[in-house]
Length: 132
Image (cartoon, rainbow, N blue to C red; front, top):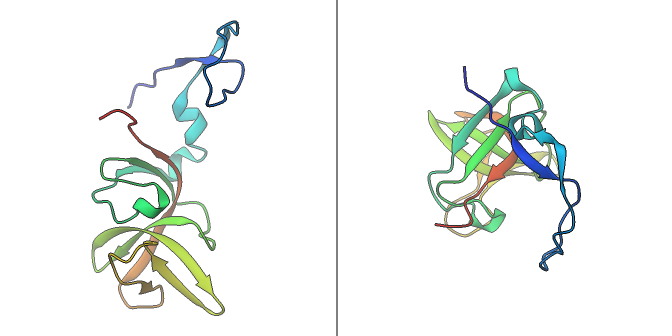
């Protein structure tokens, strides 16, 4: 079983400018797992292995929280299996067709109806390191 750590949480949101530190930590501690995992029995975490999804702010090494219980919808970032290879793509629905796209010109779009494609889950959060 994964041990879940808690982290202090400020009681206010923050703007991009440097705040006055008169706000205090609330006594409650935030468990990040409880915040990003809504359906624990249907959720997995996977690491992005390339930069194909950089147009969607997903880069190599980012951790993706993937929920298998959600029905994929237009615009969702999804994890799919294509001939036993895992892919991270955006689901684009146009008229009666659905496509898996990177949002860049690095790879060809894949039609969801293509043989061998199976959507495994919807990415609900991505965790990126902001410091090397």
